[in-house]
Every structure is written in structure tokens, then in C-alpha cells.
Length: 449
Ligand code: GLC
Image 1 (cartoon, rainbow, N blue to C red):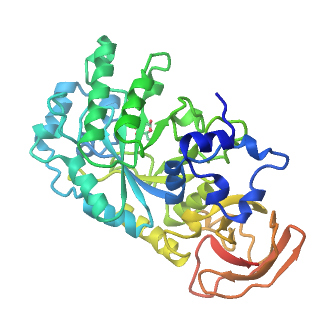
Image 2 (image 1 turned 90 degrees about the vertical axis):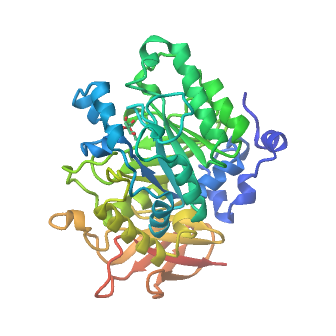
């Protein structure tokens, strides 16, 4: 069923794009698009988009092996042997509050934690649904409880990753109805025992693409118990950007560049989220040295926001549940950058695409009545120090600026920049970094009026 903007607003009481957005959003719709053709955002989707940057955590028994979250599968560990890891799962250093503090200092607004991963081990008390849960470990506390309360204490929105693929529950292979009931009962616990959850992030339907995942019933539980929660389903690396079920609130781009979502003619406005990880594994992998630098994360974050998508940046906590030192330091460094660029409630999160584009990777976002221009490659980034291109200081051209611009200033040092505007085109005379600074992506604030 395709509802027009007006019909949807009447039926759902939802916020219209126009009501939420700045005057710049008028130019965001592709030229020629009928306004009636673009669905409106529901309040939960609008809130999600404004959060912009989140932390993904993969943590479980596999963290004790330190070879990634697929260790059981790739090392062909029999379930009995693997589940011995429950005996040494102490969660000694796990603190939802400490992780939420780290997320906050990284400029993130939400955390998505694996409540259970494909190995079938749950971080919460399954109340007898499964023998593989935290109550059968020396941790002796419900870690989802710790996580959700810790997040809320720090003003971070807790979200839960839920696997649908299960390597150790026999019903997954031999009793599909029983397995579906188990999935629903697990989800119902997560929906009812831990207060308001920002979203549920499903992963694993790709393992049996032709199976009946009974998603109407599964997602129905969320709509019943947690109507404000986002529903996300990871479509996997090959299928980034696909919507699938009509209840889905955000498409995913696993380790892939998000593309702007063309929402014309869609029955519902969906958000976008790219998930990426600090090295090449999601769970802790102590022999994986292939780390992203803070510069790289900053660039990824900016390119996600250019497409209007969130970035969900993953790390794998240690066997005991602490943030590993490199990831901690790198994410805090990204947080320093966000702070310089106005904090976690500014351009980088609140800014929306508005059809303002520059050359190569440069782009603009609308922030209230103003615009922020994101300027790349003033120098080489650390990752490509030896041979990467740098365009250096000088004129940078942008298009799509429908309103007169009064002033342009760098956010990092307040320096006023020369500019020329002609019609919707603008040339910004980007100056070089003052000696002693380099923000990788430099942001200029345009004051309009
Ligand atoms: C994949 C993997 C999984 C990881 C997820 C994160 O689907 O199976 O290990 O949790 O990606 O996006």
C-alpha cells in the first residue's frame, strides 16, 4: 500500500520532513521529484538519524579465544568443547556504564551490543530458554541488565543485536517451529525485562535465505512491547541497502559505502546505517593488526553523514569485557575531532544532506538555517602518507546552495574564509592548516541569511 505524505501523517501522527528540517531540505529532493512521492519520517527514525554515530560491540565466549567471533565455526570446535568457555567467562571488567562513558567521549550517541551471537551464548538470563547463558557462568549477573542501565545512566541509547543464525541450538537444524518459538521467547524477554531499548539489530537471516523466518511475528513483538524501538535487519555484505520486510526502519551497509537512499515512491521512510569494525574482525582478534586509524574513522563517519546514514563503529572487548587499549584511544581521538567540530549534537549528527556537493569527496550538510561544508584532502591522510593525493589549500567549488551566504568560518579555529557565490554555486577559498593542526576533514560553517 502506498500512502501519500498527507495520508501517512493523518494515520500515524508522524512528523513531516518539512516540520523537522531546515529550509535547505527543499533542495535535497532530486530535481523533478514530487514532494508527495517521498514518504515522511516516523519520529523514531528521525531520532535515530540524529544520533549519527554509534558503537557496535561484539562480545561473548569467543572473546576468550581472541580469534574473532566466528572462531568456533572456523576452528571447527565441537559445541561441548566450546561451551567449556562458560566456566571461565567472568565478565570481571564488563561495565555497561564504562563502555557508555567511552562511547560518549567518542561522540557516539548509542551502543548496539550482541545479546547473543551465532555461537548461541546469551549475555542475559534466558530464564531457562537455553543452557548457554550467562547464569551458568562465574559472571553471575545479567550483563544485558548491566549494559542497559549503564547506558541510560550516561545518556547513551542501548540497542541490542540479536542473532537469528544459531550454530549450537539443535532446533535450528531439526525443529524449525521450535526454533522460531525460541527466537520469539528470547526477544520477548529482551523487550520486556530491560526497559526501553533504542533498537533491535537482527543478523543471520542470510544463512537460510529461503527459510520462513516468520518475521511478521518476530517484529510484531517489538511493535507490541517496544513501539519506539528501531527494527534493523542486517542484509549482509553483498546486499547492502536492501529493505526487505516492511517493518524495517533502517537499511544496513555492512563494511560498505552507504549510498544516498532514493526514497521516492517508497511506502515508508527508512534510515541508513553502515557498520564497520576497527580491524578485520568483529569479536576480539589479538593477531589482527589491520587497524583503522582515527583519521580513517573520521573520513568514514563523514562519508556516512554525506549519504545521510549513521556509522556504527565496532570493537571487540577483551575476554573480561573491557575496551581494548588501541580501540579506546582511537575512538577517544575521534571524539576529540567531533568536539572540535561542534560536539556530538551538531553538524556531524544533526546535519542532513541537502543536495550540496563539492568536488571529489567534498560535500555540505544543512544544519538548521546554516550549512556546513566538509573539505577533504587539504593534506594527505596518515593512512596514505606515502603516496596519497592531497589537493592542498585553494579554491573548492560547491553547488546546490540555494540561499545567499554571508560568511564562512572554519569550525576548528574560527578563521574567516573568502568566498564567491554565483547562483547556487559557491567557491570557498580553503586555507591550509595552521602549523600544529590537521583535522583530516576540515569543516567550514556558512552563515546564511
Ligand atoms: C556478519 C557476521 C557477524 C557480524 C556481523 C556484523 O553478519 O556474521 O559475525 O556480527 O556481520 O555486521
